[in-house]
Image 1: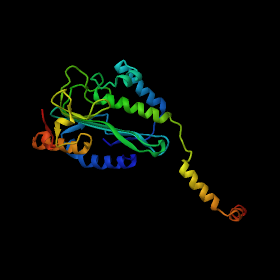
Image 2: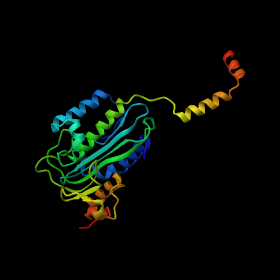
Image 3: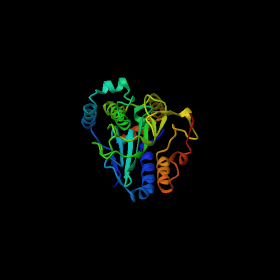
Length: 94
Length: 175
């Protein structure tokens, strides 16, 4: 079968998948995180999956951070300060 | 340290090169082949995972899975492999909800060979046993750097030649 490539998804879908694993093992994500669950309680592949889902959920919940870094800001300021005000006026006029 | 686009290309190339060898005498588990990335913020990025499995007509199967977690600033998109499991051995006759042979049944066969890195254990392998064999007892092979497709090439060659899988992987286990 062709490779399934998933590059889309939503937070509720991920949360549903986590809930399914929690139900299957009768464990909360908190319990999973605390116990590690690598003690044989959770099958190896499920443990990898669980950890992946928790990481993906955390990534999805993180706000998009598009603020420029300080280095980038400094570079911008250098470029902006080197622009001649007359050039800008000409550009606007054009 | 990897990026999703590179990893995706790498996986597809190796999958295409290997699948013909395996599909002759096996059928793919419905859970794979699967590549899954995190969709936001665009472009797709870490965390991502890959998994694939084939059950052969002699009752053996392989299942491989690896997961890359995000590393560095949120917008870097880079991933580092933190967890993986490469498994070969007899398959349980029943399939689980995820489409792969069940692993938690009392009569689940132990793996011929499984190579693992997980969160709480040091890198280790299993050889016909549930015992964890740590890296210090494994000579000739770096578990940390284990390559999914090198493992699968060894499985292919093992099935063709009957050479022991450990020998093909250049693994020596010491007491």
